[in-house]
Image (tube, rainbow, N blue to C red):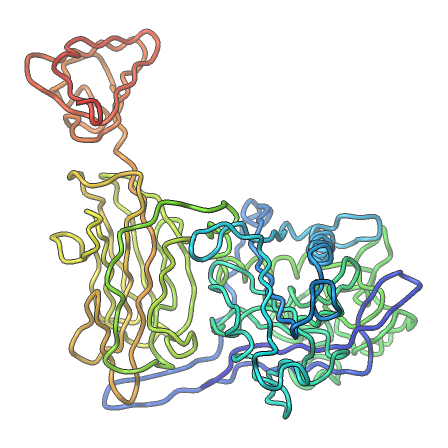
Length: 565
């Protein structure tokens, strides 16, 4: 299977002149970029794992300047030591680390230059099970043979433990949280590299996030600032589309080098003493005039004088957020515990194993825009996202819904909404989308019939291998050779329809109301100022009635309001 990731490493050193712990010079980055792969598997069935489709630019100044606060969970994988030990930093150091990250990303302080990224980070308040959390998990990793002596590895270094094994000790859904693992050693060393991270596109739920050495966890070390840049798709400022040892070709700046047009090509540097850019033969271009900062001062380099991001980097980061990590925006992880959850439903089973080709790559439904990977890459055929991923809709309204299958392979795609909240998806009208394609789109009209409102209902999204038989809400099939797809659950909260009077008139006369209908069931009705509405001897129903000042209503004895009968 192709790893669509960026693996980033460096050494931490002390720079007394800046009173700042930053990156050292003895360790180069290992940087892997996805390679195209397409496999023909059977007549007419193209299975592909493709190159990244690239970022979808958010060319909107309003969107681009929105302040986003994103949830973080920190997993401290210590070696059995007490809190406060070298490999088990106490809460105060973790708080200081997050504060330092926010100062850098928000350009908050005297020496900080460049742009305010308008992204900040906060420890989660709600766990995946909807309970309260501090956003810090501490786990004893000494139970894993080899962890105490070798730590974690993502390059199969002998004597170290694979990252999948270590991260399995404590891992929260990457659609809802930024996972940060603090470890005792990386690739056998407690000194270098200081950390690594993964690019967002085609990320794997089992590894996605940041890994940091415990020694870089404090309020001054900038390793986390740099790594968070990679997490949001930033390359090194000295990236050259190869081994990062030459000057990048810069004929099309958006497609070459670091893909940023306001960071000039440069070679890897470890300090800021060199005034001449060897890639141009000229002095480094000043990109922050007040502070006289250049590309050497960029967080995505390796120097000891990092103080800025550029406007181009801000655009790329925010494009990555909106394209591949939007779930962090819609996540409920910063809202505190939630007692309300949908009715329990069947846990899907699969006739065959995980697939590297099939799964729910993207769900777009009203305010939900959730990106994920295949069942193989995520190591699961089922995710229950109802605790942290919720969408609000209104009775009688129509909403577009789109489900994209992984790698744009053909899928059998279905979406169910358990409107009556009975834990079953077999009732009439609960199958709201069904199709066979790489992308399936439909419109969902929320029914006006009586069912629970203002309470979470379960929506199940299924994207399976196109082989027959078709999947259902509880069964995913697939094949023995290609594996099975995925099912994902989300919460849907339905609000009552809101109706208001457009003029004086009879209650049972449709023209009296904004919907050109007669209010019913749990509709929330407002009689606007100066309007007189009369209910005759017939009995009428609604969910709520409100009168604006200067309005009046007669016939209340014949009106039945939900909850008051």
